[in-house]
Length: 371
Image (cartoon, rainbow, N blue to C red):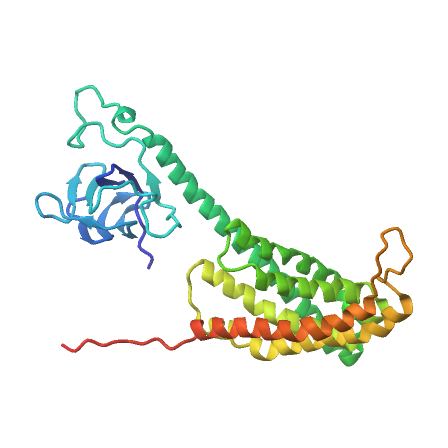
């Protein structure tokens, strides 16, 4: 049974944090505060009716006991519960929670307090703008910051989900056709799934830009090498040479690429939700060991087989004389590409993945304390 969380409205000064918990008919709530964590549980009437409610928040920074030595100041009203936490160090928190993701039930309290003791009174209400200049702007920026974080997360989930579905589609089409036609289906692989593969490959260039925009962490060089290398093979080597499109190596290349991605994208989705599924993590950082060399081998075969075709057609070759006074021989470039880029590139990518695997799959050391 899932226990619902009440709506919580928060506000702050440079010395304290205020939580207004939207519950009625609360008698004795169970509140525990430890350093930078607060847990709340009680029975009351809220958005889900008369029910048990609870929540737990990891705060942005540490708190300290109040003047009476209590962890928090708690006031119970007929229509709400107010909790005031004193900050350990006077400062303005950029957000309430330690994580950048904000729970849907956590809101900003723009009303704040109307008097020094937090109770309504008949006195003239205080002008909060005078008490804390620029506070509304700060609170609005915090709320917008949370929303931007949520939109970023939604975008990344949708992107990874679409890519995963696309590669599942490619694998499904290839598998169904192979079951029906057996080896005769291999020659028509590009005809049936080539368009989908080209679309997904173009979409992968977004992964190079995600770190630049701060959407994901990590470097740009490794994804740029991987995405550009694939795009070169797909568009320059296969799409531009019809005779290559019917070769069996295209079937095996698409099979390897798609198998890698149907594992990688679900793994990224789980990481966005901070869910650690061990079997998926293990597959993500283990399947590359056989699949990456196989993929690079297939790519090298495609390039090698294309050299005589480009010798014959002179496609992408620029001969002199011309107005730019520049010459480019595509077959020679392909030979250099195979020699200098393919195998050193494989070593670079494999070394990078090996380091990631060592970090992600290293055994956890558990230290047991003797009583």
